Amino acid sequence: QVQLVESGGGLVQAGGSLRLSCAASGTFFRINDMGWYRQAPGKQRELVATSTRGGITNYADSVKGRFTISRDNAKNTVSLQMNSLKPEDTAVYYCYGRFRPRISTFNDDDYWGQGTQVIVSS
Image (cartoon, rainbow, N blue to C red):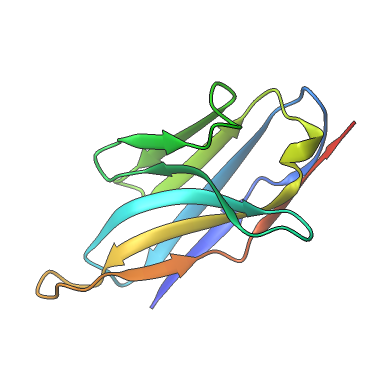
């Protein structure tokens, strides 16, 4: 079993910054993709940023130039630096990871954190 635990959410004024962190623990062979998703009230969960194990990143158009995703494979962590925050960034942010449970298997497992609240006031 794998656990993903997020931290760093909170309340911030528009134009401010927050840094979200996520730590993976449990039993697994390797983490492949990791990323951040968010869900605002009444909205579907949407991709914010992803990173492959090799550091290839992808961002939603709405956050390009403002958010930066980074990984530390040795520590099994992923972070999201959020700058120039806007009220529309308000959401619960979820950490995501795709895990290879063991070297001898072909199937990967997806895990999600419980989420951390980000509120950006106008």
